Amino acid sequence: MRVVTNARTDAMAIGELSKLTGVHVETIRYYERIKMLPKPPRTAGGRRTYGATHVRVLAFIKRSRELGFSPDDVRTLLQLGGPDKARCCDVRDIATDHLNDVRARITDLRKLERLLAKTVARCTGTTAPRCAVLDILDVQRGKSSSTI
Image (cartoon, rainbow, N blue to C red; front, side, top):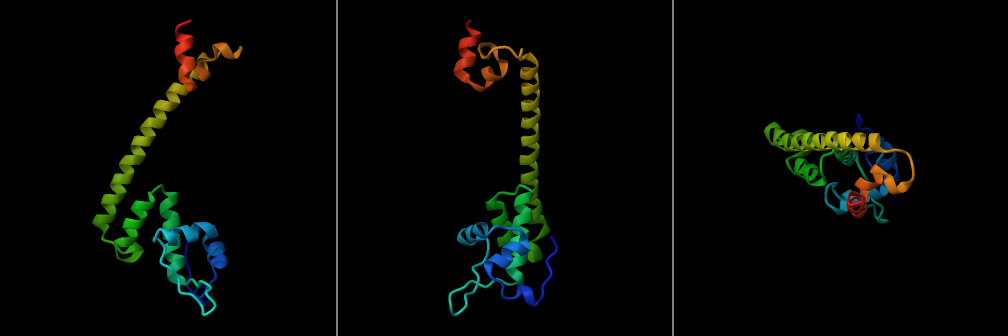
């Protein structure tokens, strides 16, 4: 997402920010509550007004979350100075940890794929009492069918 700063992004309502960034209004409020997104100034009438900084930080949060970074990791990246000021070595450490987690999940998913493929191949398609898929999903069922 490319963020363009102009007069339109200087004093937006939350709905405008939501449309501009593709982040739901409730998610924006959530990010404010957990202190990932800075609290916006308010008008005399109490309405929140968001500016270019909010747009950029929210776009950064959204993209980080899309890439699977945890809220804590995103918060840490923002505390390091966000997209402008963070030291590359600090960001690399966080990204390396995340990469290791992603690789571990990929390994687990490959194991799951093999297990499901074997189980589906064993499935006869007959009645439920002899279903290999149900056997691996229902622990009690798997125990009782192995003793039959």
